[in-house]
Length: 95
Image (cartoon, rainbow, N blue to C red; front, side):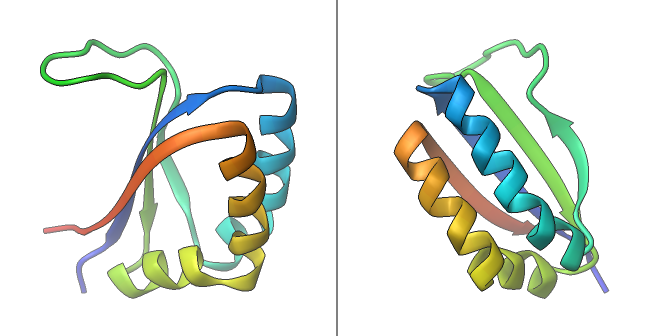
């Protein structure tokens, strides 16, 4: 079964309150087996507009990745994130 991946590109507007998002999202990530492969860090923009924070999260399956996003636990965190950051997020299936 192929793994699933979240790819998120984020500009944090309020770093102090973004910490509340990180804490609120943790239970959902633990419940759905999230494994962070990239979480911020240095990056080199190559094409198109860049965002300040890039995140890649691996899940056991595509369904785990989608279910994590849609879970009540993560939706609480998402509301916090949407107030303090701008983001684009996609879920992709691994090969």
